[in-house]
Image (cartoon, rainbow, N blue to C red; front, side, top):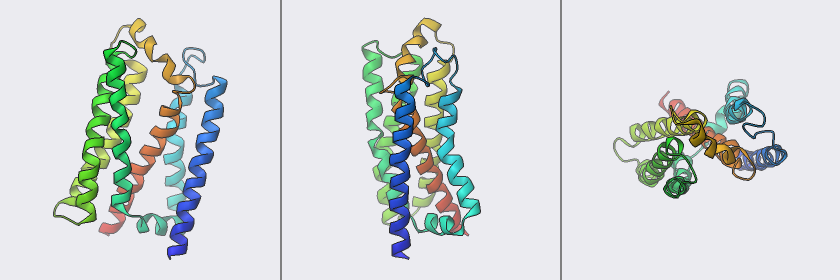
Length: 202
């Protein structure tokens, strides 16, 4: 069982590296850039592919289901602490580099999730009362935060067009790796955690 678990982890790491390489190449060619391609559709598709791929494999492969249930929930939660880097969105907003319609919700949302991650991970690790419920809320809110950041990055919710054009660099290389690499992998981590919780409750 341990060998299978280690093999799954290695395979997951290899797939992550390949995903970063592929999206990095696409990003460097400018295919994600807006308004050059006139649409955010390619970014949206890129964000959804890893999650869809996992869901399909989960339903088709007993080995994937077994591997998912063997994962450590605390270890699926703790990596979200690195989302403190979302604070840089707030700094860039302060200096007028990013528009408030995107930077404020993305920055504050990521920072809140990052601050909560270690506490939820510790609660799960020591199996404290209410830890699983807290983990469910954490991962659900984490997904909402990521999708809301993507939505505001594309629409700005009524922000002036000239202001929202400031987000264009986020669709160009190298900043494009944030929405096309890290966001999909974070969403995938949330989905895997929620899937494990659901399986453990059966």
